[in-house]
Amino acid sequence: MNDTFLKACRGEKTDYTPVWFMRQAGRYLPEYQAIRGKISFLELCKRPELCTEVTLQPIDIFGFDAAILFSDILIAMEAMGSPLEFHEGRGPVFPEPIRSQAAVDKLIVPDPNETMPFVMETIKLLRKELKVPLIGFSGAPFTLATYLIEGGSSKVFLNTKRMAFQEPEMYHALLSKITECTSLYLQAQARAGAQALQIFDSWAGIWAPCDFERFALPYVQSIISDLRKMTDVPIIYFANNGSTLIEHSCTAGADVLGLDWRSNIGDAIKRVGNHAVQGNIDPIALFLPKAELEQRIKTLLEDAKDAKGHIFNLGHGIVPQTPPDQARIAVDAVHRFSGR
Ligand code: 1CP
Image (cartoon, rainbow, N blue to C red; front, side, top):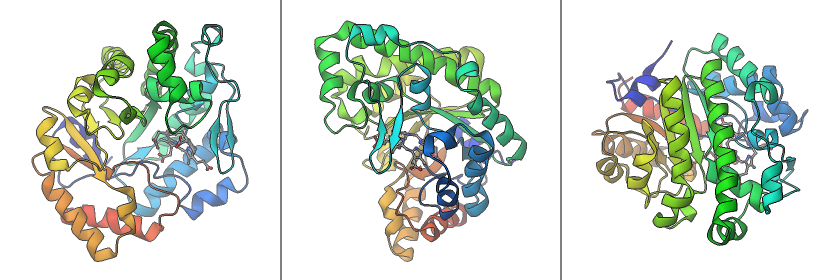
């Protein structure tokens, strides 16, 4: 197996810089669209053979150094008992938003093997096929809570912040339940064969640092401390839009900090202490002309040379409009410039 990615996560010396892209399986790939044309997104997430196929597509096409399980962070929220729908063009919708103590009490902490067997099955199938490491993942409790409380995606997160500020006990009860669910879910993924785990805190950047410390970080710390008791797989914590939160994020307990593109990677590396880093080119920079894209990648690799470990990635998910050829240019450039 090519374990370059795992070595970089652990801060061991590697022959070249490993690369994968957040959302590397998905809508920018015609091969994905072909499968999605025949089945809804939620159904796709529950079909292990198809999830396996979709996970493998970008590995086969571009030669990424790690695969990420095809699923969605919100699958576990459906398993907690909150009905979930995906509306074409609008994204996820929770038709029964969680905004009362009674609604919080109704949520269950599910056994992940019973409620999400398709995820564990996908992991097992993938481990038979893959020659690169498999990353499992979850959302961070706060990010997951925003979808439950808002009833879907949000811009200002009024309901979430209002609950945290005005009804901190209810907020804490909800977050604690999500934390317990997520902890068990990630443990189950590790047991099924996931070789690294990434926690996506996509909306972390909406908080002031003092509130991030109160309303988001403790729940991530709790999950990681549970994981440390049962597995030594590398753990990646990605706090999106978190360049003002880097010192706080370092206390999450992860091995690797995911960085978005808003900080210079060299500056960020000086702030992360004993962590490896993952990132951090602007996903839209994949639209740059070839020579400029390559130059930007070269500069980024140089800026990251003092990292304890560096995994090249985008600063957030690849956008659906990205021409696949541009992704190929980027992956090849990372490999070539870093000495593969
Ligand atoms: O129409 C389609 O085909 C669905 C599009 C899609 C895909 C391909 C969604 C809907 N989710 C996914 C897969 C997915 N989601 C993966 C596996 C694919 C891969 O990475 O290769 C992963 C890791 C996620 C994680 C995820 N889902 C996050 C965290 C990462 C991030 O981008 O910040 C979040 C926030 C979601 C929620 C979600 N799922 C899908 C949508 C449209 C959204 C909402 C995003 C938003 O609120 O803006």
